[in-house]
Length: 527
Image 1 (cartoon, rainbow, N blue to C red):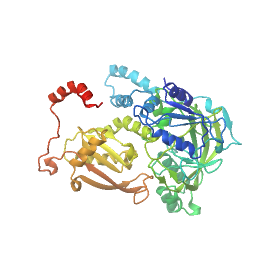
Image 2: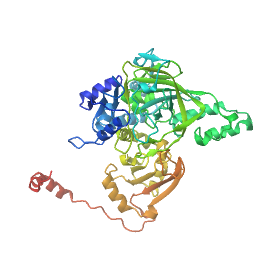
Image 3: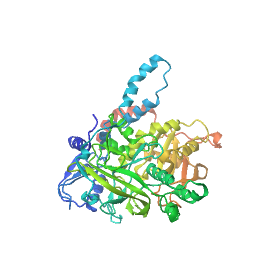
Image 4: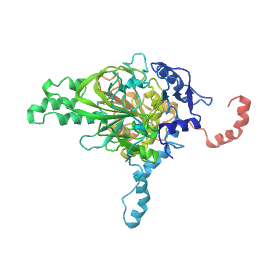
């Protein structure tokens, strides 16, 4: 059964021995992050990395408050969060829906009914009220009432780091739930870190486009600036009379059940609502309630809801912020979120995370995305066998892909296909290997790649969009990428030499030694 809410999830973590309650006093300013960072990098007796989920119950300056962190911080907890024994189970469910064919006759239509009924369970439903409405504050509220973290010494301030930010497409009316950090400026305003390639940033630009003149040449300068981006690079170009006016409504949910929190980070197509993805993952619809002051729907069982808006003509310096790259992302101009109403459960539990040098909690969320969305990548790249986004590559710096090679130049075709796929367009380095290489075994990958390539022949460079957090690219959001073709080279690819066989022991000898190995291992003193 799906978890009802964050509290139900915390109980499940406790039952599974995956939760530690911290009763020693800890300060949300730096100290909680340092504790969580150490735990996320710790190993248990079996050598498993990730430590436990932590529920802080004695927060300095916040008597009675509770804070949950590292809830997704291990492979086991990610499986527990999505209620599967293996993440491949979800991938198989996705494959099942993708394999669904158009019915050819009456019997085919009858056979499809159970599948269609199951799909109906995924769609969200609006309810009259929910626990997130237990306390409603239109006045006399402050963001500083919550134990919001400052994670790293040079951070620009406190940041909300695990929010589900809800916006609506002004053209289609479809909702988006994304996860964007929010720097707290004061009691009622935050930054909204909408990187220009994110869906919410596009919603913001669409609102701006609607607000500027559309009468020929008169509106051209403003429209051009909007199309560049509603940040410092775009906002600075707007003359006072041409600036877009108006507001864009936004809502933020903090402390949702795990499937919805996870859904906020998945690279889903813009037309697919994350509420539906969460329903698919939990096999139960997400219940929504109407906001008090904005025309948006939010998770009924969330711990905390922030309602408000961003002005279309207002930018403010946001950052620095110690990011998942292991470096600080630098200051830049971003929209400002104004809070108009706060609703929350009685004694709300504040859910948060810390990012920094891996492994951190977000590493395991990213690995789950890798496993679950592989079938969707295969729709576009059918020769793809497997991918690995090594944690140390912080997900947009390195992808290792294995393929079934059928024709010359196919590895380079795959590289370009990956660079054309949604968030995968940010991948800085792609390594392509043959299907018999286990991409999850980085040592084997290194052996094969470094043996198989002729650098001048097999490495290609291209230019394209880069992740905003990439501090090394020559320009913000734009730079070079590298692809390495580490597949075996064919004569049709201009390779005229023989390709050697890999060293592999005779199968009969391996079986013979396998039978003696228990005795031999004892004599040798090895495990």
